[in-house]
Length: 481
Ligand code: ATP
Ligand code: MG
Ligand code: MG
Ligand code: MG
Image: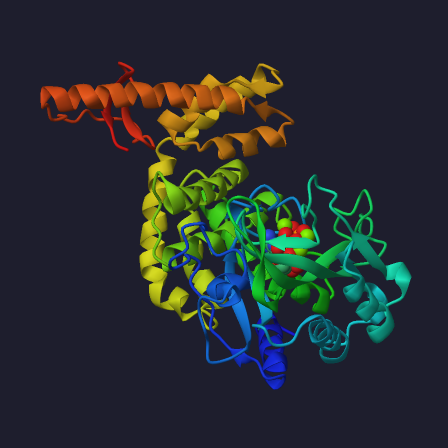
């Protein structure tokens, strides 16, 4: 089954159970200042769960575009290192707004997985929130999952409700205990069952989370009971596709195989690889990062974000530049990343027409960002290499700041390079340097205002994130907040 067929099977199954198929909302949440990007299917229904909004249906099903590259759910550092994480992914979900609850949700999930998708029951494990005896009983007595494959997960992350089985959208908002379904990819893959010390391997992969929405968490940390207990579920399309296509990694599913091939071609071309030469390693984690990040960047631009120095634009810039740096690592010495927009539109444009319609614009936006970064990446990498070659276990804050400020290396990009060499970045030192620069810039800004001067414009190598810096004289020229 192709990813597109799996998406359809899911939606049709829940439609047959009385759910209304609702379209994905944009990756940029409409009117939710608590959220940088849409991180789950339930986001567009937040006010329905809270009782502030009503819909003509009490059951819905969606395939939602999600981005997890910042805030409470941030998978940026996992991409390329685990078999299951993306920055952009599609979350399949079914929702009950005060309609059905635990019994039906669990039974629907089980029926879809074992009857429609025909997964062998013995490969499925489930977890429940430690105190949720009701969910435990449904799995064990009604569905028949043996006790050996049901794991209770408690508040093991410090503090009440800090559990993998207590789901929160962010620090505030609807939340509740959850039950998760894991698939065992078999003994060839490393990793232990959920709840075990080595659960983070790639063997037992979480495929589906069923959240029993019961509370609204407010800023003061208080859990208020929701007007009606509801259900919110999320299953990663790429993860269930890997299972159904009998591969162990999301990056081996049909959609990614093509994207990875396109990424390799683009990188090799930009590296000057001649026909007949092997080019970069097709299994390199860097190619996975690039294939992942072109999705996140393209969908973000399609929904109206452009690279910038703050907020969403800065997240987009960080993702794009990380991908570009991975291409550079593989040998690319000219822009390549933006050329993946059209191959992506071919793969996903049918399900998401905004990609097809916006392809030329997305291409241009990412091209500009890439050309800009290629002006400084080589020199920045030299500086970073020099620092790494000293053998220090930590890159000092001043160097990280210089890379950020003058060469356009967001600090997480520097950290990403360092991690490959087992080196860390002095984040606190970086913050100190950053704050000093802010203060200087603010003072200069005030001076400029007081004097009524206009900045005449000095050519700079790189336009910093928050200010322009004239590199030769080290004078902060203009402060742009
Ligand atoms: P994990 O523990 O693997 O990081 P999660 O517990 O953070 O996943 P949930 O918040 O429960 O994930 O999201 C619901 C589902 O969405 C997950 O069960 C998984 O199938 C999918 N999912 C979550 N994060 C990602 C990601 N970064 N990339 C791809 N799929 C994801
Ligand atoms: Mg996660
Ligand atoms: Mg999890
Ligand atoms: Mg989960």
